Image 1: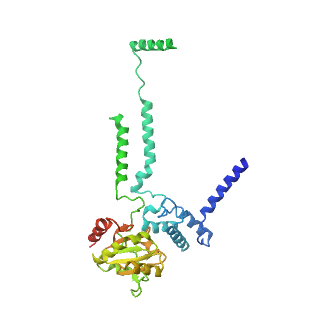
Image 2 (image 1 turned 45 degrees about the horizontal axis):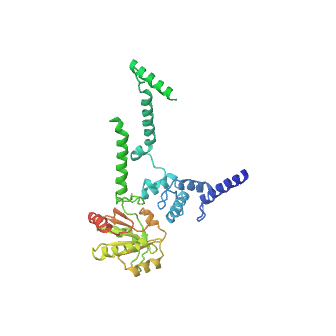
Image 3 (image 1 turned 60 degrees about the horizontal axis):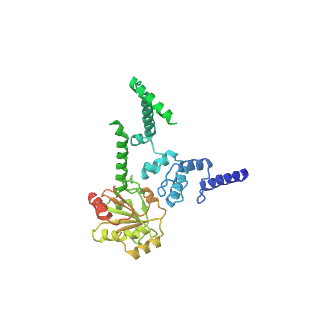
Length: 153
Length: 176
């Protein structure tokens, strides 16, 4: 059984590899540049399927953009230049990871803000004053209730 | 006050989501163009209609506003908006430049023969590079260009329904 399971996992891993490699186009001859281009493609959002990177997408436009990425890397552009080229045309939207700038401060800070809010809420609850001790009347009432409960059983 | 705070937050969020949900203009597939406010990219492309000669960005800086429409013979929504393009050209006298996106010359020509040609000038963007320079995410898209060759508006998707009267024409008027 465990062997079957291992084989299943191996199959799943292998399909992952198969999907990651785009077979419809020619990689760059220089393996270093090809790796650089591939790395960059993972950060570029496909404009047709939107939540896939252009590396994952089968859309026509994604293929064209992959080609542009390869061409520009081959020409000696840095990944930053290629990114700027795409942002010029499609906006920050084309980057899967939004850049840190004034419009996105809230976006990037929000997890920490919410964490801080929770921390404040927890701290306040902890600090809340313990309830005042019971008065003599209340103690008597409590004793009476407890006794009643005891008798019910 | 403090005990109502969670309720207030939930109601406020609910109101925001409801507003976004019912906003008819909001299309989650539409990516706002960053090309608006920028000059048209430089290009030179062959014409679709024989005898027009090559089209370059110079034609888009002629001193009067015009529309640039990206279309394709294989694009179904392009057929849907074609009637409106004809109307813009013939009834409103608006200059429209048609760019055939990733199309074959013969197919684009056959498309215009079948449905009519609303374009003053045409160009064949065979590899789709001009569309990428315009930030096009899919055909059809229509750009309003002012007299100086600046992009002032991008209409995403086909010009159908109230898109013509409510959006495109006002944007064209504003470019004048």
